[in-house]
Amino acid sequence: MADVHLSKHEAVRDCGSYEVWFDDGRPSKFSYFDDLPNRRLRPDIMTKAQAAEAAQAFAREARDTDSSA
Image (cartoon, rainbow, N blue to C red):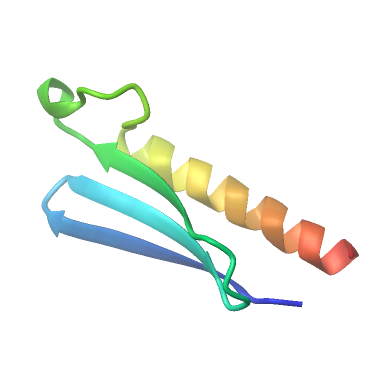
């Protein structure tokens, strides 16, 4: 069973991503955010709160799936 980690990356204030990464080498999953609406040009860019919730939900699901296997 691999550990699931959640990391926040924010090089510029109010703009960045949450990364869910795994110890076993599976690819990371990113949830991108930008809290300035005029810079949210792509539909997959969320607010910081939305991205945090999406990343936490994905990490929770991955952890639960790994623990039940």
